[in-house]
Every structure is written in structure tokens, then in C-alpha cells.
Amino acid sequence: MPVTTLSAAAPDKMVLGVELGARFLVPTCRAGEISFSSRLCFNGDLINHKAWGADEYYVSLPSAGTPPYVRGELRVSVVDGIVESIQIGTWGIQAQGGALAALTKQYGEPTRTRQQMQNALRSRFPTQFAEWDLKDFSVKLDGSTGSIDWGRIEVTTHRYRKLVKDYEQR
Image (cartoon, rainbow, N blue to C red):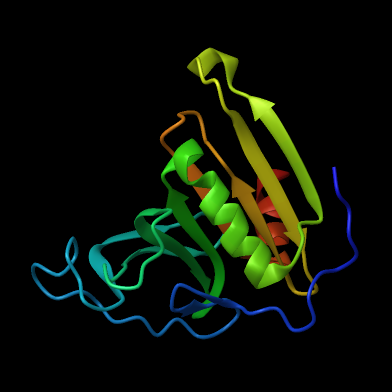
């Protein structure tokens, strides 16, 4: 399990066109644009209001330029107009290598990594997990999330993690 110091100087907070820690400026999708969009836009009919004060937006990605490991839309959590968390669905075990390589290129070597066989899923391949602890935010890769076909990347500010944790401990 490799351990490094706080990774790369001035890591990039831009995640597939959405900037962590910046004002949420993604426009609403037009009719017919939600599934097949040529630009970033969010589904105005599908906004979740979280109990801890965040609004969660489902952001459609343009098909051109979207990395092959990305599955579906982004889930962007916003507090007081500021992007605090971005979740990216992945294609699970088949995409975890590409996702890990892209994240390592962007953020440097992970702070923590581990592999785990998903025996209940009858997988012959280990699921990869990786985390990056950065100055203002963290990045987490779950190679699979209960199914070998689904994985997740979370890019989250420390402030948002604390907000959720404090709410859950109430």
C-alpha cells in the first residue's frame, strides 16, 4: 500500500468541466438534451435537496471528450451556490484501470490504495480502491460499488465531508 505526502502542487479542481470550490454555473438542459447533450447541462426536474443543506444536481455530459471510463451523468452537490462535491459513475471493474491512470496523472500517486476480491460477485478480478488526500479536497476511487459493472469517483471538499459527517452524527 503506497503512501505519499500531500500530492501534486496546485492540483486541478476542474472535474469534467465542473470546478470544485467555485460557483455552480452549469445551465439547465433544454428539452431532449438530457440524454444526448453537446454541452454540460443539468436536469432541472431532478434536483435533490439534502437534509444537511446541499442541493444535488444531475449534470449531463457531452459525449464528445468524455473519458471512456465515465458512466452516466455527474452528481454535483452545491452548498450556498458553491460546488462542494462531484460524483462520477464509472463502468466498474472493466474501467477501473483507466480511471486510476487518469486520476494518478491528474493528482499524482494516491495517498492510499488497496485491492479486494469481490467474492460474492463471482469476480475473478480484484476491485481497486484509491484515495488522494489533497490540501483543500480529497479524491476517492471505488473500482466497484456492489456490482462489478458500477464504480464511483468522488471529488469532495473537506468542508463538505465535515458537513455530511456532522449531520450523520446528530
